[in-house]
Image (cartoon, helix red, strand yellow):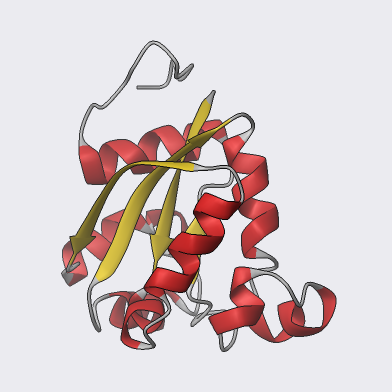
Length: 147
């Protein structure tokens, strides 16, 4: 079993997509191990997206991520990271609508920033992101030495 962090971003919650996204998650064989609604402030959003801090879109991203609450979830299943990334589709929701029309981003995203959901891109990122939102929730079924 593997765990990953999934996040429904402010546009996903304000657009009332949360229940549909959770239904897709469960129908795709994931277990939602833990979830929480969180309101990020600028400091926490900046820390979460620190790897993008030198990019031109960083300030806009922080503003967007603090514009409303997000739903963070720990998802679990075999190969969770890969399966979640496939399920959410390409980063740019405009492209997802044509190349991956059944993806979550095609369903509710707008563009590359307002793309409705976030997913960890590696075991290292998943471990860091789960720790960021939920603290140390390791279990014997999770193989993340990075924590």
